[in-house]
Image 1 (cartoon, rainbow, N blue to C red):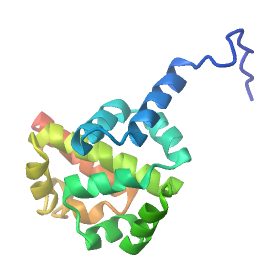
Image 2 (image 1 turned 90 degrees about the vertical axis):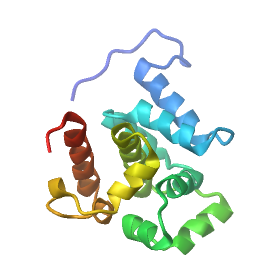
Image 3 (image 1 turned 180 degrees about the horizontal axis):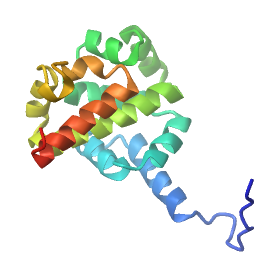
Length: 170
């Protein structure tokens, strides 16, 4: 195992990566910005940065970010339960008690925020993207994209399909 050399920087100094992660974490707990703007900002900062997703999910995300996504994505209780494999009642209890999401749900939520940001970039609106998410997709072998989001690999496949649509390779 390789040891990192000791830094002569002050103890409060953050590396550029640590600073970026800290900035995204601050966005995640912001309450005073519009949910759509907040999710777009988070998407822009974490897109294609798996390390940031890992680090941010370790701390757990505020439950309110899940409810922001539910509103923007137009998810029903049943769809939310399918995607997160948890009861909606549990999420309402977390909300009441102001709990953080666990690591697994936080990672899934960050990947979904990124997916919805990518969908917005591809289709130009959440409304159009949400409609596409509920229709069979040729590039996903006829699967309805929303139904495969219960697996991280499903989220990744939907993202790949969006990238194919963006580049005209479908």
